[in-house]
Image (tube, rainbow, N blue to C red; front, side, top):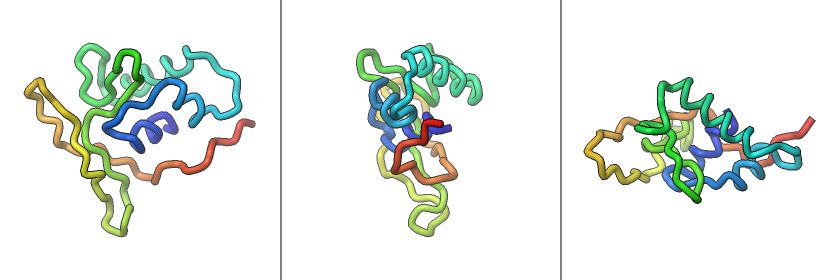
Length: 113
């Protein structure tokens, strides 16, 4: 979930693998394979795939990004406020349906227990 929240907090901008390691696993010793596995599990859970991404896109040499617009439920007392950022589509697919995260982005690093 923390990987998804990290992606959502920057949507639609890409988040590099190094940023994900720093944000989600701050101070922990993990390999790049952990990120790949987490992204794969997230894609599986939402029925997405790498070839035709609808939710999580891999950007070569840049990282990962969430494709649909993102809002956080409960922000600004409105039950969810859109970030106002819409990713470019370029392929004719409708990506206007928002992706709603039901908690605000984490501001502090996760504890490493």
